[in-house]
Image 1 (spheres, rainbow, N blue to C red):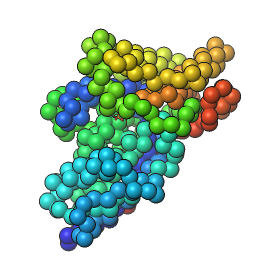
Image 2 (image 1 turned 90 degrees about the horizontal axis):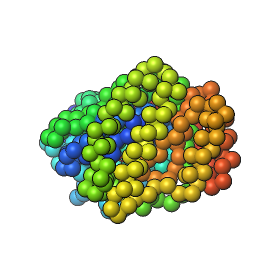
Image 3 (image 1 turned 45 degrees about the horizontal axis):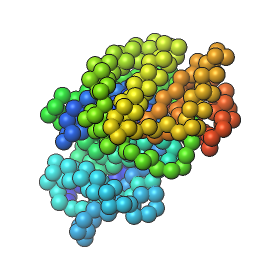
Length: 328
Ligand code: PMV
């Protein structure tokens, strides 16, 4: 293993999609059926260390201080297999990962987790830094992870079947705009229907699937245009419609998946009341019950206070645009 560092540490941040990805065009390569656009979130960090060890007979994976579950270890090993294939090395590795934000916050730790893993693994096995390849590698594990490789405002195009090089790219750096995301955490429980299963059901059974694939690129374009213009009042309604359309798919799947809880509805109501009072804030939600408020930095404290005072909201988190991978 001459010339191979054998050890690397990588920090990646979670991201939230303003324009949602939901559903795949190629299950095997994990390619999204629609384009998505996200903001990378500071300070929602995952830190991952990869250490190669010739004595190992398989990869090990420790998550937040405890051995990870077998399914999680298998997903990590699959990503490492990709790196081993590219390098020709066969050495297994110890992987240690720590989330510096609550993983039940509804902010996908899989996004920051697989981005940090791909960054650390490629470096530890001696591959030169190449964010596009790192993003494509993270995407195969979790499509939203492709976006967490980059900082600021990040796009992941829809994938054409077979396009295994598909990677995310930066649309604007973090300094472009002081957009904030305030998360209203409404439960500490893990979600019951994961995004992979939920989006599979949507494609197979929702009567709205074709309408989603046809309309998502238009929502994406409207969001990209408002983002470029830094116009929160133009952005917000499209951000809201992207998530409500995605949730309509889940709701109209068979069996139906409803990610909302009573406190989610209460938080959405609190944001509607704020808007009625002239505060430009709009919600988004992912495959879970937490509500994420999207607003400008000037209004973030007011938004956070309103959400914190909403019955059923356990606590709030506040994030701003952050950087891409940090590698050493
Ligand atoms: O990448 P996954 O499988 O965790 O899917 C993420 C899907 C959403 O979070 C609901 C939307 C998105 O674009 O991040």
